[in-house]
Picture 1 (tube, rainbow, N blue to C red):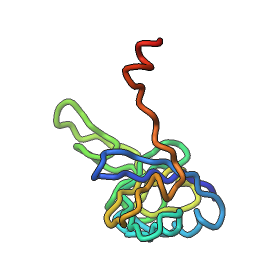
Picture 2 (tube, one colour):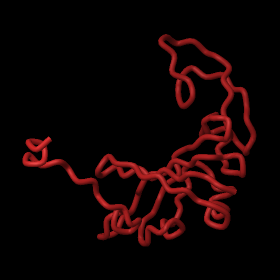
Picture 3 (tube, helix red, strand yellow):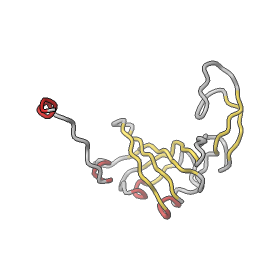
Picture 4 (cartoon, rainbow, N blue to C red):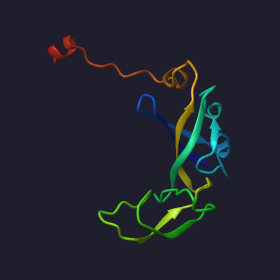
Length: 138
């Protein structure tokens, strides 16, 4: 099992992507949208992550309220997977709210944090902004 975990930080507005394989990815199996996960699974000790959504290997979005792991055709007026210009109900195919092997991306947001920053825990170096001197040389 292999998937991409997208971690959104509501405080800073940034998001981070982590590739999970085998054992780490299997720890997320059978969890549902809205469940909280310990951040230690991905190396974020002391962080809590809430699952907010995701998509499967064909790009169909996961939708809260659609039980199970299968794809389903549901009537929608708005929401995840369908944003019409006017109020028209359509049948749209979406994925259930439970994570299984067909899910390729899981979206999460941080609900509890520690004093250490995410960049520090994940080993990401912050991008350097060009200073005025460097801009003048170019």
